[in-house]
Length: 113
Image (cartoon, rainbow, N blue to C red; front, side):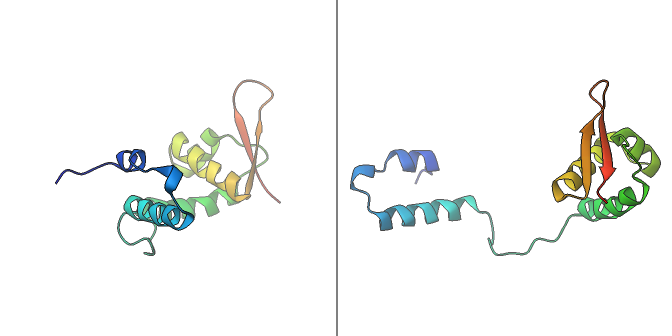
C-alpha cells in the first residue's frame, strides 16, 4: 500500500458533489493527520523557555530609557540574538515598547510603565 499526501487526497475530491457534512468530516480528518501525537496534551516549556522567563524579569529590572538589544545582552551576559528574541516576545506581550533610533537601524526598547 502506498501512502498518499494530503494534496493528492484533496486533488481526488469531487467538490461539486460534496455536502457540508462530508466537507467537515474531511477537514477534521486532515487536521487529525496534521496534528502529531495527542492534540490535547499539555506541553511543558523547554529548558530554554524557562531560562528566558527568568531573563524577562531581569530585563524589566534593568531596562532603562531606550536600550538596545546589544546593551541588554551585555548587561545580562547573553548574546545579542537571544536578547533581541526575548525583547521581541516582550513587545508582543505588551511589557516593552520598541522605537527606531533617529540614526541607523537600531531599535530602542523601553519598559511599559
